[in-house]
Length: 268
Image (tube, rainbow, N blue to C red; front, side):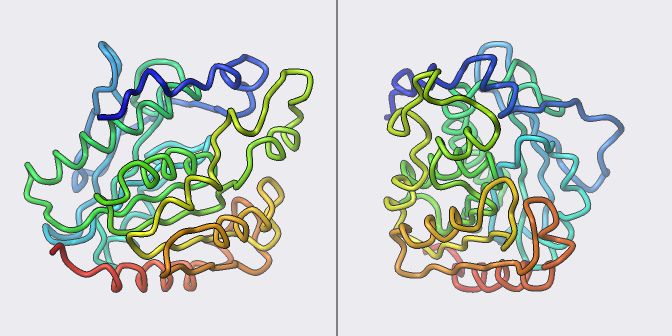
């Protein structure tokens, strides 16, 4: 049992940092009737919104953590592409995003992802979705995804990191945060590059834009190089920045996703 109280990112949970790392907004409108909306309890009185897009009962279950300016509803249009690949798609919001309660902090996000993972694993089984579980994180979402991969590697069949960051300090400095003045040390931050070394139990796909202006392609390369999986793929989307991967590379993106799904197969 993981002691979540030991997950402490108080060095990052400061207004001058959080204002750059989180950009929450509510979800408006009604979701498609073909989806299943979930509320995942993470604390007394606080639940996180999630949306399940089903392909098939036996399909791979993809648990997805999105970027800092996105919400679950933003992926309603992309979900059918995943479903056509034979993937059940479950994006989850952070505190304060979409239909979620609470206020986003780094410590809360990193603790909550454990509760999200355990809840969804149980929910899949109870509702007859018996396919393997894959975890994916985009941008900021690479941090909770890699937290899960490092701690529950034997319970997931694959890992996908899109536009993820390898080290925290360079990203914070790029965002205009004075890490020296705030006393922020790399070893007390997310440690993404160390966590990906611990995942070796399934195929791993790293996707990154060649001209990413927020998280340089070198971060994607570093995560790929450090990954502990013997079956790993690095997909570079030529000419793409942080936010137009689908526009410039949707075909190669979906092909790589499909290839990973084909490798996973069905549960033992």
